[in-house]
Image (cartoon, rainbow, N blue to C red; front, side, top):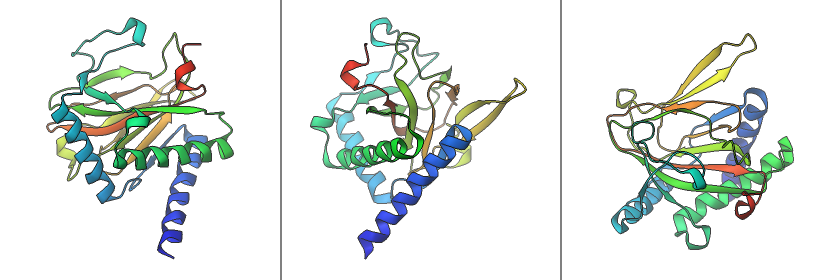
Length: 218
């Protein structure tokens, strides 16, 4: 009975993601991860930090990668699904379910995904950008799942979306990076930025692709 209720809750969240993506091009879902799942993922993130496997994030596709800490100040650790620790695998399995549900309901033809752990030190930002590369247009949906326990508005670190309006103007939507919250949006259409925070800011960040990850160079 408990498992059925949990599955029903997850299905409602998947429906919320698909409906809002279809209507608005973005979705915000609270409690996508339960509190214990957030703590488990934070333990994994700390483990990777202790191993020294985080690297300074760059700008652009791999063949044209540049590092500019004024534009982008985060550190990332890519997830290798075949080597994922159990809490990370739980997350990936859920994202796989999300992808399948979106394909059934939104007909986007998604085939794969890629994710990394992300750490923004205090005082760092990621200036306005779009997630789809000029030389590689396979990223269709962006996903960010936040891992910031006890986050308050005064800590900053909002994700700001710039939503195009029919009259050519833009609407700004700010999303507070609270633990368990999922934000997703069209990678090819919605400019966004990460605002400065006063605390370390943690998340799982990734994309759903219309091509298998190993073939995105095509």
